[in-house]
Image (cartoon, rainbow, N blue to C red; front, side, top):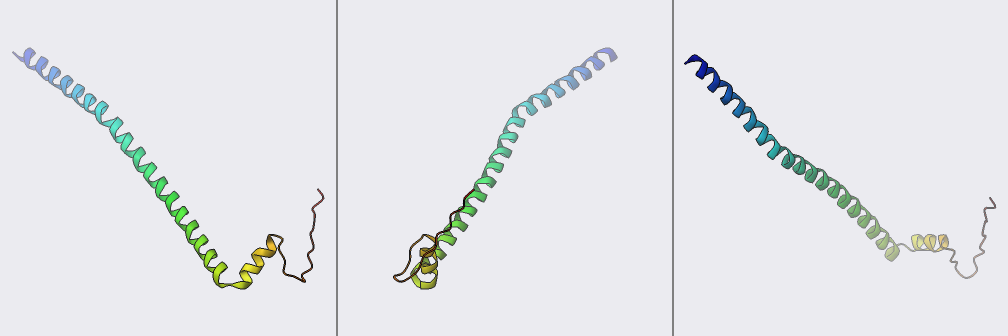
Length: 95
């Protein structure tokens, strides 16, 4: 009878190992997919934060355009616009 007990123990152990391997094969891809979703979520959160900061900067510039004449004049000069009576100098880089 001890031979049968040994066989039952070996078969039970083998079945347990196979069951664990089967469970691992089922759950490991799901765990990896979940981790990928979390990485993507974090990346999207960073992108959203960067876009929100960009929106805040643009809103501040818009407010300055509406309320700060010196800022408006500086930006206009950067784009080559001038007030009547201004003398413009244009520097050309010859490389």
